[in-house]
Amino acid sequence: MRIVGGQENPAVLDSLADIAPDLGRMTVAFGYGDVLSRPGLTLRQRQIATVGALAALGNAAPQLRFHIDGALNVGVSPAEIVEILIHTAVYAGFPAALNGIGAAREVFEARPDVAASPVDTAPLPGDRYERGLAKLAEVDGHAGDQVVASMRDIAPDLTRYIIEFAFGDIYSRSALDLKSRELASVAMCTALGTAAPQLRVHIHGFLNVGGTREEVVEVITQMVGYSGFPAAINGISAAREVFDERDASGGEARKG
Image (cartoon, rainbow, N blue to C red; front, side, top):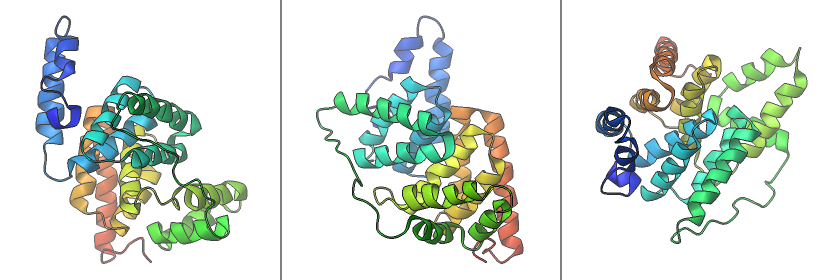
């Protein structure tokens, strides 16, 4: 916790000492001693996941600010943090993304060592739809075609928005690598707890772009501290389904 928080004595211990000292102790001992100290993910990956999850949840601004600061402490750049928060719009909507950016602004302004500037302001090349289809295929293979086809008869505009906005505009941005985007997506979908089909899609996607099964299990396990055991248990159930599907098809279930 000292590495993430940048303090010798964790502030959570002092802030809870007068009312719930055991909760402060549990936060440090379990959240950091048991979970974040596990070797399956780097601290950088863990902070990317945590910032994404807290931004998507939208109900923990103080903790989001703490972990944005922590992300900076472990090597995540200001541009990458901004990009994670922009990415949140796809899964939790624009209010969550806007509030996340507001939290980031506060953290950046409090740190003289941080120089944040707008990123990816130039228009992306090519047609939005074609660019989105290409990025969707890069993440999901032929499974992306199935997603598009499944809604075309009832909500063709929603299908187009997924391709043009989510993948053509957001996923095609360069400030965050694709594996980190999918790591954040798995964290967000797990934490929200209401998107099991989409969580399965993004577990597949994370594996397709270089993630490992161990990393999937780790990021879902990590969500215990931010969205509780039920969300993490349900996330692991989704991961089990994905792993079984890939095993049954030789490991390339979503590549077609």
